[in-house]
Image (tube, rainbow, N blue to C red):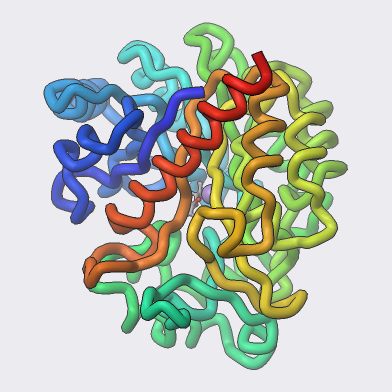
Length: 355
Ligand code: CS2
Ligand code: MN
């Protein structure tokens, strides 16, 4: 595996490349062109400029998270082909710049959903949290304003204000899209992009839906092993793979994370490793990465990755906000650096004890 950190780019991230370069064992970044809109072509020039900037800091681009998918593709409207053509053009430009990993998601309307961005924990840190009771009692249109006050001024991925302004329209667009339709539209998209992925050896790594169940009545399909297997079989190409996100699959306690990892051997292209602390089955918060702080056995997760011979990038995922840092919720420097160091420590011990 290669240890990496997500970086949103100069002007979008409070964390600098220099800081990332100084986290022991982190050699790459997972990045994006954060100011592009879903459906827009990423020019080769902009990709090259991003790559040059990252490489000048002594790091390299280990993958893109995310090239977002336009709603027309998820809904399957008549203009989807134009947006898929644009996506293919972006993949080609990435491939020509020697970038071979693209993380994306196929969630309708929202990316991840949390009900609090700054829940206070006993140690004074703040974390992202989810309560099903809150979701059940809130109108999705009010959700954005209720959480954005804790966003520290950052634009959260998937929760861009322009998008939230159109939330009613977005819900309307998806009104006839059920799970079957979403699978069908995902298949159509994947079939069209596989030739360019084959040509440039680009691994597509779908990110799970977070939380791993339907919210606000919207269909969600990338939620458990059966559905991932279905998604991989329906377009049976090694470039059609997954991002294994422990914190997202782990929201559903029926998902056995190490077993899932073992079943994904060969198609698991990217890993997000983080911990959750369950207060009840439908209330959880994002704990520190350490096993003892949350509900997951992080050693078993890392060991399963080791056992399948995982060689792709791994990154700590959302961290707590600690030491008075002010940053995008989940994406501060300090706790993710602690997370990376802890995961590197587990990995070293696993490698040495297993070989
Ligand atoms: C990320 C997702 O912050 C997060 O929860 O893991 O937003 C992820 O980047 C997207 O779903 C991938 O498209
Ligand atoms: Mn994730």
